[in-house]
Amino acid sequence: MNGRINFIGASLITLWAMLAVPSIAQQPKPQYGGELVLTGQLDKTMFPGRNTDAQGMDVYLNSCETLVELTAEREIRPLLAESWSSSADRKTMTFKLRQGVKFHDGTSFNAEAVAAVFNEALAKKFLYVSLLEGLQKVVADNEFQVSFQMSAPSAALLPNLAYRTMCIFSPTAYKAKGEEGLGSNIVGTGPFVQTEYTKGVSVLFKRNDKYWQKGKPYLDSIRILFVPDVTTRLAMLESGDVDRVAGVPSFEVPRLAKEKTISLRTISSLQQHYVVINNQVKPLDDPKVRQALNYAADKAGIIKSVFAGTGATLSRAPTLSPGVFGFADMREPGKDTIFPFDLARARSMLKEAGYEDRNGDGFVEDAQGKPLSLKLYGRKAGVGDYEIAQLMKTFLEKLGIKTELVILESATFSAALSVGPKDAKYDLAILSWTVPTADPDEPMMYMTHTKAWKPAGANRMFFSNPETDRLAELAHVESDPIKRAAVVRLWMAELLKLAPVIYLPTLNLTDATRSYVYGGVYLPANVYDGTSAWIDQAERKRQGINR
Image 1 (cartoon, rainbow, N blue to C red):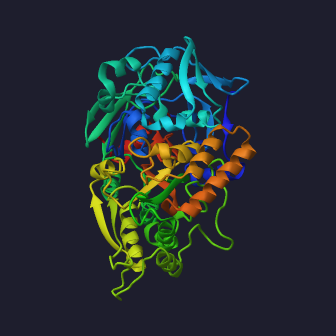
Image 2 (image 1 turned 60 degrees about the vertical axis):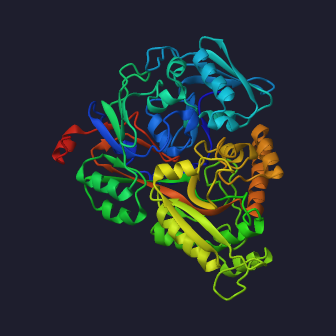
Image 3 (image 1 turned 180 degrees about the vertical axis):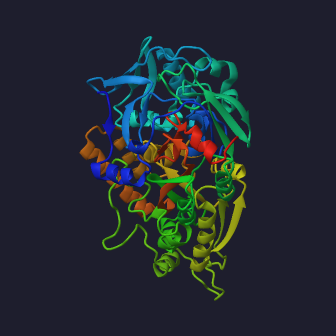
């Protein structure tokens, strides 16, 4: 088995092609040279094993590459691996590697390097290891052939290896610098070599002159400025201080579309907003209460007031969005979304759980007269996070729940949401999750499985259910796509009953780029690949950008 694997139908690819502009066919011949200045965010380490956030991947993907990659069209294609095959019992997947590839420190990329990275990931429990469920060890068969040996077949191994956080860093650099060292100076095989880093300020990547893809990259360098506030980012773009901004607010799109020096691009994403519910605190340990919170959220109102009616779509399934394998429409007949807004139904469910307004003050109390009060964490970062947090406070208070909104600086927020259940101080928190592999294994094994409780994985809800765990593990090994899709549907049905989070709209992603920039690829996981990006130098000068 080699080449490409397509995860979605032609109709969705066509939709993506219509949304993403300008098309490649319209682009002139690439030019070499120049520095591309981007805005981004990096609240944690740059070490892939300890930072699986999209903001982190958007930074270290410039230097660090995976064996295979997921394209913008949701296809799996070779990257550092040239081809792959499975054993008859499907317990071993073997990869033939590219030859002549070097890490940025001059050491050779080979089978021993790949084995060293993944065996270390297993031994040190890197954050993504739950996605490698069943992997026993990785063996270097010869210099350029490596085998992943499993205790059971894994239907998700190949798409999971396309997850950017599973990139192959230099084992030599790792031994010398450790996680902390690579956390500020990532050493991979990618098109750009990291040369500078100032925490909280910026990171610089310079052209890898020995890159294995001949003729690439075109740019001399990529500089990423860490600017959390989107308003500031847009001002920097319009003034020419930066060349690209991701996460453009929907209300800004019509204005920016009139700017001749700025190009807009919108893609359908694999990213869904949600509200973390701490399932370990009372009464949030009760599914009825969690369902009530879901029905109290006016999702259509969020789309209208935060995303201008166009920047997001109502979710049709929990966690998964169109384009992910196994996605199915899970809405009730005649409803426009899962958990449609129904305040009366939400109040009734709270009453069934023992909470109602007993003293007429507009807030609900338990049988002992204690008010239900929750702490909601948010941040002024991300696409609409802050605005959604404000709306959620309003929705919850209309339901009769006293809600304290705690807005944190981005790094503090990230740290607060990266702890285990004993240290977690939040009841609720505004986040978004994406499925960067277009395969359900990540949300099943890494976002909702009991083994993935923070700080080990991304289960910040501390949700645990034997049936969803069983279904996740079954889907992980099932090779028959029809049977596997049926298991995924059962898993989604369980999530609708248990409501571990508050499900919010699915994002459309828009980035804005100075019109002299071409070739960069905006991926549905909300990361930017600058391998083929280039700058029209004459047009840049014509626009008066001389930095």
